[in-house]
Every structure is written in C-alpha cells, then in structure tokens.
Image 1 (cartoon, each protein chain N blue to C red):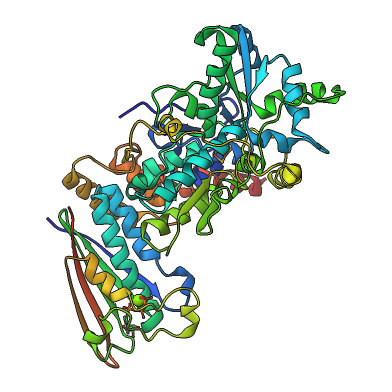
Image 2: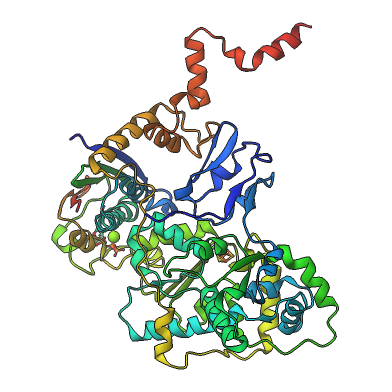
Length: 140
Length: 434
Ligand SMILES: Nc1ncnc2c1ncn2[C@@H]1O[C@H](COP(=O)(O)OP(=O)(O)OP(=O)(O)O)[C@@H](O)[C@H]1O
Ligand code: SF4
Ligand SMILES: [Mg+2]
C-alpha cells in the first residue's frame, strides 16, 4: 500500500512553534484509527526529534510516511551535525544552551527517548553538513 | 456505543448560518448545511462554547423549568457553589440557602459539602498510590467527554470518582427519605446549575448507572426569583455546612488546591485545556500529580448559565470564604468511599476516526490529502465546514461536495462559460450604467 506522505518544515526561527508537526501527525493518526499506544510513542519520538532540530540545528524538515502497520519518520537538517553520535545517544549528554535549559530542555534525554519509543532508529550525521534521524514505529 | 444525549441545541429560527460557532467548536462538531448550523451529535461535548459565541443567541441550553418542582411531594435544592458568587454584597451563604427555602424548596443540600468529601477521597487515593499519574479531574462533564472523544491515551488517567453533584444528590435524597419516610420517587432533587454540561451528566451519566438528580435548573433562570426572596430575608437560617475547600470548587484551581499538594496544574477554557491535554499526551510534563480541567473560563463561575461575570464572581467567592473553616465534611470511614467510585472505565469513543477499518481509513486519508491540495487553504468557513481540511474530511465521508467550496464553484462556473460576474458583480455593473 502506498503510504500517506507528509513533509513539514520545522522552523528554527521561532521556538514557540516547536512541536507543531508532531501534533499534526498525532491528529492524522487518530483519524486513521491507529492504536493509542502507538500514537503516543510516535508523538513522543517525533516531538523529541523535532525539538532537537529547533534547538540544535536551526530547524529542518520532518518527513513522515504513514503505512497501515508502521510509521516511518525522517528528520533532516543542515545544522552543525553531531560529532560523536554514540555519546549523543547517552542519557544525560547535552550541549543545549542555557536559554533553552530555562524552559526545561537540555536534560540529554531526547535521543535516548527516541530509542526507547521507536522500534528502529538510526542517525546519520556529518559535522558541518547536517543530521538525519530515521525512525520506524510499528502500528500495533 | 451509548447514545449521546445533548443539552445544547439549535434554535433554527434564530440561526443565520454564520461561521461563528463552526470556527469555535473545539471538537469541530458543527457544520452549516442549507443555511443552518447542524450539530454532529457524537462529537458534541456540551461545553457550551457555541452558546457563548453565537451573536444571534441561536444556541440554547436545555434545562428544566421551575414548575417541575410541582411534580414532587418533597423538593431539595442542590446549589452549585458558583451560585454564591452571583450576588453583590453577600456576606453570608445562609442568605442564599434561606432564599432557596423561601422559594419553596423543602430543604437545601450544598454541593460544596460533597465537594469536600470528593476532595478527601481524592487525597486518600493519591496517597495510597496505584493510580495512573497525573490524575485528571472529572468534575467538569464537558472535559470528561472531551477526553473520551479526543484523547484515547488519557482515558486511563481520569479520576474515577463521581462528581460532587452526583454524590450530593444521592446523600441528600437518602437523608430526606429517612427523615420524611417518603419514597424515592416522591422526592425531587434539583441541581442549580451553571451549565448545560451538568444537564447532560444527569441525563446520561458516565461512571454510574443512573443519576439521583431529578431536575436541573439554570442559575440564570431562578436568579430573579431567588434575589427577590433574598432581599426580604430578615434573619437567615443557619443552614450552611461547608468550608473553604468546598466553596472554592466554583473557581478554577479550587479542586486542585483542596488536595494540599504542590504538583498540580489547573487549566480553564476549552482551548487552554486542549493545549494542555495535547502536551500531556506527549508526556511533556515532568512530575505532576493532578490536572484540573474546566471547560469554562475561570472555572464554573464562567458557566454559560450564570449571570455574573466570571471574574467578579470569583472575587466574591474569595471574599465569602474568608471566614469559613477549611473543611467541614470528611470521609468518616474508608468504606464510605467505595460508593463514590465509578462503575466502569472511561471508554475511548473514536468519533474522529474516519473508518473502523484501518485500511479504508488510510484510503480516505489519502483522499483528504488530495482534496486539501486543490482547496484554497483559506479556512474561510463559507462552505459550512470550520476549515478547508474539515471540508475535505466531509467530502471523503460523503457529507459534502467539492463545489461546496465557493472558490471551486466559481472556477467551475467560469470554465463552464457562466460569467463570474453572475455571482454578484452584475448588479454593480448595471448600476454603473445608469
Ligand atoms: N539535530 C541535531 N543537530 C545537532 N546536534 C544534535 C541534534 N540532535 C541532537 N544533537 C546533539 O545531541 C545531544 C543530545 O540530544 P538529546 O536530544 O538527547 O538531548 P538534548 O536535546 O540536549 O536535551 P533534551 O532532549 O533532554 O531536552 C544534544 O545536546 C546535541 O548536542
Ligand atoms: S467548567 Fe463547570 S460550568 Fe463549565 S461546563 Fe464544566 S462543570 Fe459546567
Ligand atoms: Mg533533545
């Protein structure tokens, strides 16, 4: 079956819009009738990735493919890239600046949470080029 | 699925078919068809938002007339604490309660008494642990129904305790039966309500088989009569039996502060509540014990059946409670609590779902995506749907047609050779000639 494909621009300029794309995907999945637990995992994982693009990479794009049995998400940005992906994946590792820490971000839990809530995730990143975060979440 | 009873209806004669209500409905439950607003029953949560915004007063709340009191041998008034905030210079709640007695009720039972019991029960439950955190309050029936239709993942977080109104009705009636020897049917319990949502909760309750409330009167409806009686009182009778905790339930934050815990959030106004629930679904809050939700701005003081501005009412209630004891009603025995429990879980009603069949829903969603691309993305509401996307949904579910969009219609007309001016410009053209 051909997936339902959505592409959202995630703006890096206005922090207050962060989280909108994952919110829209959530609404679509409810309409399609995805299982609530899957919706929750998808929403959290995508939200974390979306926020990361805003905080660490000055925005990017979220590509979402919805299949009957799974959702595939690719978050791509042309930000600074991640030097040591394994380290970034560690719980508690964060380079978030102080101003966003004041809002409660920067616990270094985003990427570990994505890992936890997805069935598959992969990061491709090159310093100075950008970052791609692939994730797959099964439907049921 | 159970039937969706509603206490918000449309007055066809007054409806002009404008776009005010379709735009503001939090569950996108209203469409304008054939020039009149239509409420999609399974989506409506009776929040009263459309009543609030309709400039033509075409949305009406259903409640009982005062004459319903005549049907019973013995009547009990159940005032919501919001009622106390409706009067200027009120120094003592007993004036309101005595006024109700003078109106002809045989007795009064304050809902705030039961609110204190529910607060006590909630405190105990949270202390005991084992609940899915954060616990979401269920006192506002509109918010319970909102969660039921929109937030599947939060259905298990709701506090499964009956509302103060329901608890008060049962206790009041039982006490009256014992006192008078009358039968259950002979006693009429009348809730004096700030909103239509409570009417819905009486006619089709969630969490209990049957409500003990027999009639729901609107605060705005009884207000003039009550005020008249209150003005004649020389010495009020000492009937008030609740404290700060119970009375504060009228205001947003009242139920939460009664828990005497710090980690709570109180949201009021449907839009704010929706934003909070969205975030809650994404687990975006840290440690929180309790979430209080009220459909109305400011809490129940903002209900559509009240007479006073919510912020004025709030200030008055704050003043009134000043010299009250903290709480006068407590759970005497743990056993008493079992009766306060819901008899079921909150079942998600996926009314936003396009189809029960996932593959079919996927096809329909693909259809929506295709249609949305051809629509002008103006969300103007002229088609009768709240947004272009909503029209696309209506088209794939065969409730609307593509040329319900006036821009599409215009294109169709011009490509069919009908001049665009046919739709209005001709007249002005004619005028210019003369
Ligand atoms: N898209 C990205 N571009 C560049 N660096 C990134 C990107 N995403 C994550 N990182 C780096 O990986 C680190 C860890 O990310 P993670 O999401 O786990 O934590 P955080 O964003 O710092 O804090 P939290 O997610 O808990 O608010 C970040 O601090 C940042 O250095
Ligand atoms: S907030 Fe109070 S007045 Fe408003 S709908 Fe809910 S219960 Fe009724
Ligand atoms: Mg992060």
